[in-house]
Amino acid sequence: MKIIFDTDPGIDDAMALAYLGAHPQAELLALTTVFGNGGVDITTRNALYLTQRFGISVPVYKGAHTPLHLPAPTPAPHVHGYDGLGDIGALQGFAAEAEATSAPVRIVELIREYPGEVTLLAVGPLTNLALALELDPGITGLVKEVVIMGGAFGWGPRRGNVSPVAEANIINDPHAADRVFTAPWPVRAIGLDVTTQCIFSTAAAQALAETGGDTGKFLFDISRGYEKLYRERDGFAGCALHDVAAAIAVFEPQLFDYAKGGVRAVCDGIALGQTILKQDGLLFPPGAWDNLPSQTVCIAVDAEGVLGTYARTI
Ligand code: BDR
Ligand code: CA
Image 1 (tube, rainbow, N blue to C red):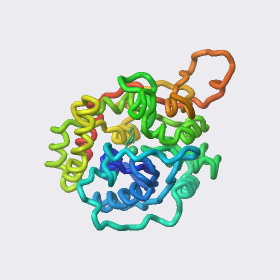
Image 2: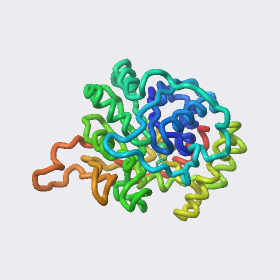
Image 3: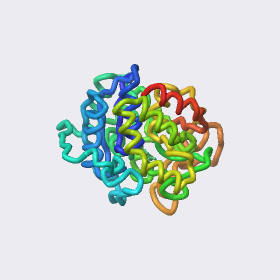
Image 4: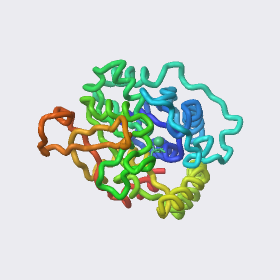
């Protein structure tokens, strides 16, 4: 399966990349980077580092450094570390250059090169995808699927991780998210409803460290602070595999249940970054919820299936 991985590495982004790199059916065409878990210079350097560390041969294209219309978000080093990869010192002295082409341009080029074949897997703010849509609105009819980690739709215990109603990737660029959800291409959203059920325990991380070679050991090391945060802040029994769940959804859609309908992202006010699904079939007076493309959101997950798939693949 041809995949463009749009990412802001990030610890769970790194975990997702390791899965994609190990999956026999994943043909990674490009890594495109975006601000999010750090500034885009940091996330791009991390993407370059991770491809080398995991032995994945894929070009890296640098993308957006700010949201479409909002100021750059305040850094949150308590989640992924100052270096975006858990502050274990892995990146000291590392330097490499991304490709010369920008991420949104490369996204358009690849979709045009492989019409109907490319899955866009986006696990950071959706700015690069929105910019690609702006460059070439015609790509909507040429993409196989857009699978995103983002949002929360009211089916799970958590509706937000940055505010009571907003998930990080959406609130970091709500205008981009709204464009991506309302464009006429097939979007499947893997949100907090399901990702907060995919909890990676210490025992699972230890097993990965023992059986997963250098990659497994590295993922264990970078995720210690991340796991501690989830335990202490959220009371979880480990860390949430947000981006991993989205990557697994590309290959194992049967591990999830879905609802369909129009989706909007709130772009201002107290509910900034909230995602709202208007389920197909519900009738309201004419207005802003008419004529939206019917998108797909995940509402339930076989979490053991996701965790087992991850452990088996790496
Ligand atoms: C999302 O935000 C980032 O911190 C993670 O990498 C994930 O993509 C979870 O809300
Ligand atoms: Ca991410």
